[in-house]
Amino acid sequence: MGEADYIEMLRQVIVGHSKPENVVLLEIEPEKQNTRIDFWGTAKYLGIKVLCLSKLKREGRDLYYLDDSGQKIGIERIYNRIIFDELDRRSDLPREWDMLSEVNAEWVGHPNWFFRISKYTLPFLNSNFVPETLFLNEIKSIPNDLENWVLKPLFFLRPGVKININRQDVESVNDPENFILQRKVNYKAAIETLNPAEPSKCEIRMMMLWEKNWEKPKLVNNLVRMSKGEMVGVRYNMGKDWVGSSVAFLNQMFNVANA
Image (cartoon, rainbow, N blue to C red; front, side, top):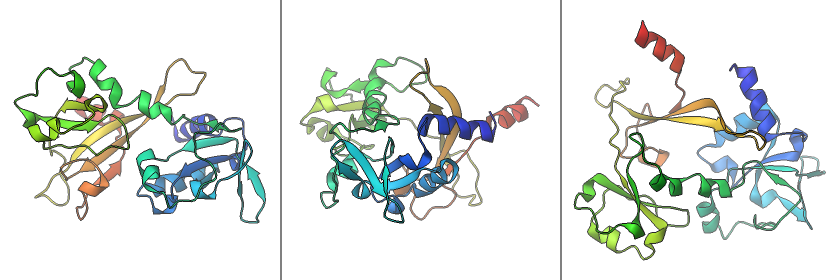
């Protein structure tokens, strides 16, 4: 798949049959997010509006925003990028729509998908390529080797992932049905960087699109996340170099390996 084909497929899934100005990428103060470059890139290639939830207006079941000239622009499709635990902490953020009431707009990937295709599925996957994962409320006894496990909330609005845990961390969970224990994956720091004393670790995420009339999702891209911290993510890599996101050219890698 070439660049043009990829962008056209992205347009098909996100914009659909609407005009780009009637489609919004919804976030909380998008200009302050660490991933804002992704928002502006999406806006550039698809022509859609990047919008803070506080700027979204509502009249009955209709949603709209005001353009630069003050004209009302109706919203037909919402590409949601809001993380709900962040929204829950922002009681100061004015909003005319609670994101739960039904409106005359279509979700591009309903927020509930995150909960359906997420950590909740892991205990049901039995594979050499999936770390052993247990629902905390179903374990018969706490593992003796907790240094090899991580404690994760199933959903947002909970404390974050704990990677160095002890028995007290596990026993103090008041609602174990909302947590999992997962075997720790130790990333190998195998990527040499310009700082030879500190090589980088990485994970490769396969990126898929799934239009509602497709039988199954389609693999269209990948995202390489590089880290020198204890975990992958911006907060664990502050002050470090050669970290962040990139892309893997898998065909070239395979060709070199087979040469």
